[in-house]
Amino acid sequence: MKICVVGLGYVGSVLAPALASAGHQVVAVDSVAEKVSGFLNQNLSIYEPGISELVSQCIHAGTLTASCSLESSVKDIELAFVCVGTPMGPNGRLELGQVKQVCARLAAAWRDSSGNKVIAIRSTVDPGTCEQIQNSISEFLDENNLRVNISIVYIPEFLREGTALSDYTNPPFLLIGLISDSDPELKNLLQDIFTNVSCTPSFHDIRSAEVMKYVCNTWHALKVVFANEIGIFCEALSINSLEVMSIFKRDTFLNISDAYLTPGGPYGGSCLPKDVSGLVSLARAHNLSLDMLSSISNSNQKACDALFSSLLQKSGGRPLLIYGLSFKSGTDDIRNSPAYALAQQLTYLKYPYAWFDHEIVTVMQRHNITSSFSMLLESSIKQQMTTEPLQYIINNNAVTVFGKDIHNSFQRELRERNLEWYSLTVPSLLR
Image (cartoon, rainbow, N blue to C red; front, side, top):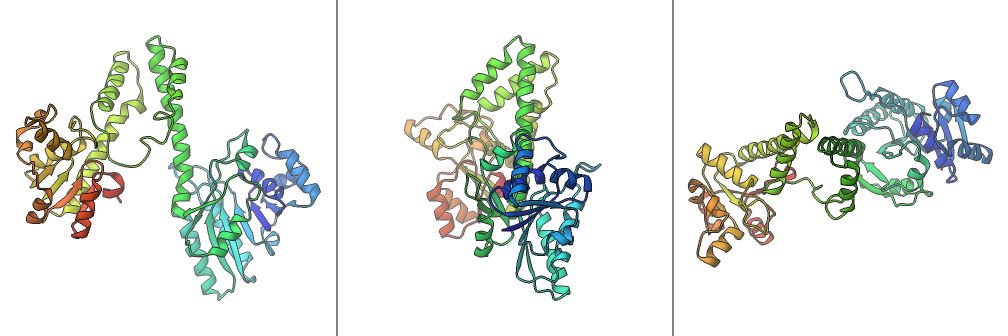
């Protein structure tokens, strides 16, 4: 395949020889003559183990060259990778001008071409950028009655400096973002690019692919800050912080895993609120300022507030049926339960509602007594319990909100009757 890589910064300098080593005919383009000259002479503008040697091999094999002229380099090119810089601007946002300018120049350079061309953006961009560029290019093509078809795709890179070549050939995943999922020829073409990459490409909505660099790198930054704040806390208490985090990382069932990493409802129960508060309060007693750890409870509360506000807006004044009052399924524990906090707020607002909880009702009926947790229920909330949730919904034209895991059989019944319901989670209420 004939491929152009635009931009000889870190990403482009790694991508160009990596593609060429897979047998593609690659031309690397940069507007800075010194970068191009250095690249051709294996005197790269970056230091990365193995790159200079790979560039030299590919140039001698005839699969890699470089140029300062974008327009002359892309005449017969099928696909162009955009790897130009998106530096942070004075307001903290990414500067996307170079990306948009290069895409516009590519479209103009292909104006006399026909058939299909692909622009694969590799630079970090804001979600929605690729759709904006696609719309601009489509307008340009239509206004000038051009025969060429240009598709924008997004293929993020996850290269670590110092191990970039290994990260390229053995990535955790290879994401390709598409604006439309209905072009099998485009998918086949894109799959044929990465023949020297160990994993199979996976195709996703283009905005999901665009946001992944933000998500992954923020997560890595969060881990660094978390480890350091725990280190500060431990050392202030004369605890070996390296030993503590070594033990922490041994738990790959919960600590280092996918557990708790699915967008859902705010946390509740006894352990998480109590222990977060205990650690932060103890740190404060030792005059430690742990900004990230101190913000956890506030962020959780803000999520609660946002969900409650959205729910009341969506319900439009209709009564609510809270299905599940305890903080998660499999327990009747209402301590720090977001669903119970919702009931408290509804009571305060004098908003009509009722609640049903399978676990609480089971314990109460089984023992014919009040469960230890339901004894904590405020009397005004206890009075709102119903044992016939469906009947309450029908009689009161109520909206259902699942306060914990969705009960599948009840959910099916609501769907069959075309009754409105939500779950007390971010994806359900904040979408």
